[in-house]
Length: 247
Length: 250
Image (cartoon, rainbow over all chains, first blue to last red; front, side, top):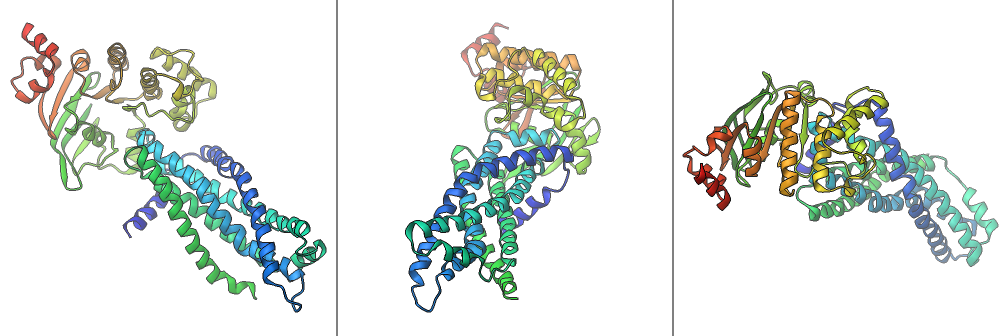
């Protein structure tokens, strides 16, 4: 509870004694490149295999004369949009971006760079962390869109290569009974997860105490806490928003 | 002028500062000395506001900084420059951007004006043609000088230096000391230096306070040290054979 209270105060500090809008614009742009653009490669790799594995496993689990082949693609699409693209990408994102972010802030803390900002009269929390959170909230949904596209396309390529389902059936399946709210659902999750990873990792890094060893621990804690928070938020959002899919 | 009145501070129930009061004069290099772990860096942190004292207040030219609202604290802080023990340069940017940083964030100067000021400050600390070097590419002494350049770039009224000589060779130490002393006189600012380096004390200590086990045990000028009969101060200052011989020769 003490940590939660400290986290809430930390988030509150982001919005007091802010610098000029122009300063933040540049910082947000830099962070967006760092957390978004630099994560595309790993997201694409993970997504290709995510789509491939989902297609193959669904195909082997739906062997029944009563189930049409396009249903396999429908399952791949729904799983990808609602669950896999936002959640698995968030876990990967926490590992890559979260650890980096905590390590960066932790190093700045132990080398007194954060103190230097404070002495200059700059709100270090707002100056350093707010752009990272905004950058993450802006870029993570774009990564999820890429992940969803690549994953579904990866499933298509897998279908063609392995022959578990024909290309035509796959194309029919991914268009079948499409609910546009699934995309909104995925984006809500993406924004939430983007915030969770950046804020928790920044929190862990910002309050690092000690030396190099503690910076490593902060990075590890950032990833662990982010992953737990992502899964908890995933459940909560599923519980709250899944009924809307059936409306 | 900076006044620290009755500063007490504890961490996790362990008291590290006991009712410390001191006055740091404008235009002078004021030293806080003491052995490692005696609380001098904590005192400095309480003065600059990086740590909040449990009791007591710090006044910057009659302005109560400790109990001020955030706006006044920010206003006072923007009149401060600080040299940290390790330099605290931003790793991700080069020397020029490090020194320019306070101007970027705190002023609306044009780029050309900022660059002119940065070059002036770098020249002032004896660094030229290092603008594009990264902090990892320069020596410890150069980092300290870049730190000083960054601290003075915004024309501060108060300059704080935390162990400016730690990890430096004697020649570079003297150079840094002289730089701090010259800048203090040149800009007529209030400078507070935390040090346990005896050469610094004797070179630049215009006023000196001695902290022992969290308490202020002595204060005076560097010339008064040799005549002091405070045993703890004598043990600290004249710990080495060279210093003992120096004292005996006086």
